[in-house]
Length: 129
Image 1 (tube, rainbow, N blue to C red):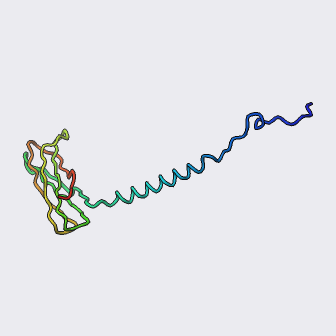
Image 2: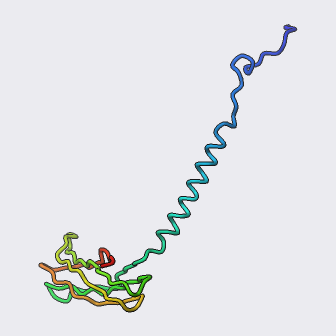
Image 3: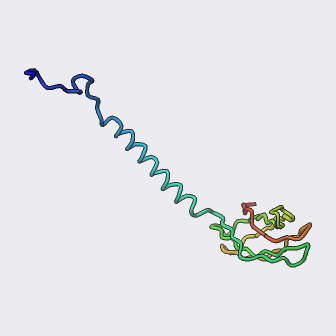
């Protein structure tokens, strides 16, 4: 039997503080959550929003697209890029369609001339002119 003090690994190797990572972790978490909330709110409601309602191949050389544009400022003049694609997703027709000032929500039907049979039409982007 030993009559000396009990063996302790803490005495042998030392004691490290375990709370040193908490403050940086809280700061990084608060910054990350703040950025996430800002990004979600900022990008969830853009100034200009375009969506395709329908499209049809009217002939072998033309696609018809019906789309809707929602803008926050009804006095803006917009230019929308419309494309038609074939079965291999190759662009076979592309036009720029201008939307003048007027209503905030505009529905438009436009014909896209194509160089070959199109199977799909889309609004690539709308921007302020």
